[in-house]
Length: 513
Image (cartoon, rainbow, N blue to C red):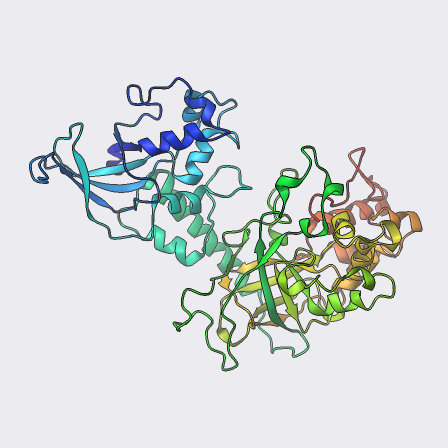
């Protein structure tokens, strides 16, 4: 018996929202929801949305005369309703619980209604009003709870946290929060998150700072909508895109750390002007999605959580005798007009940046810890973005072969970030395996055909390849996976040269960029 699920309530406005949705509206055609409820609710109310109600809100009944004592009924909101496959079946979505179905949309947005516990028994009649008498947690709206637990656009519909660990701990600590589908899942996710930190952090040997491995944050970026998308042809392809329609990013405005090392989130006269930026394990930037993290084919790639790029890499490309001319004056990477990175840093000697390097934030200004997992293997979008030739003379080829396309990291421990913070290397377990070196040995030492096709290859000895495969921090997709295939071929136990998988030609990272 769940007393926190004593009553299921639903909004009239939710029905209207669903009915007006271009994708979901068909399921409400012909439905008279005031006569026959379609979500199984016991009470339908009007005049509010999931953004207006919060966990812990207490309501009393007010009669037509404005009296809140005559009924005696008192309700307390416990949780948004987490819909299951029954909701999809009732509304004609098959197969149930599919990504574009009603149940998963409701779970992500709070459109499924909400549960309440009965604090005091009483009566309720049509026309009477529920009046809020207490609001202990105004920050935890039903919409926020739903989005934070079930709003992952690339997820499988199961609960996954879209916020910081501190926020999750705060949610779990709400005494009014309902158990089923919400608090139980939140507690599980918090336990997993803390377990991961306990498992990983002790493995990070905190050594003396290396002055040569200190990266200054220049700019932070989040995804933004593609400009002029409505002007593209109906069946558009990449060839129809203008240069500014690739890697669409916006600069996140943060309060830079001052020269005196002040915290970038302290209270100042500028409060409200700047954005808070936080990164979490598995998902990266809180509140934003990224093309490189997840994909229908490959699932969540936690070792590609954040894409870094450096000012020095852009300067090296500008200095190239052939490719430099393609970077125009308006291609300012500090304003997001670059290669799609989420963090731009300066002070990077790419020849000394290695897979497995661990960085923390200097001066204890943040708890963020990241670990380098692989170079960025550029895709053909980089050629299109800058208008360069394709093949051996293109930007894609040059940046991959020389490790200039940036690098991916996994988030070891969550934390906030803002401009002018400094990443300091605290661990360098594989000094041989720098970003340019790995790029060179896997993508720049083969035949002209292999280079032109952007395929992984190996012309060195088997022992060194085994050494590469054995690096535990090395990312799988495009790097360790390809190296394993090449190693299998060298050992004579199957596999191929990396240009085909399962009998089909590998597309080579075009989906990820």
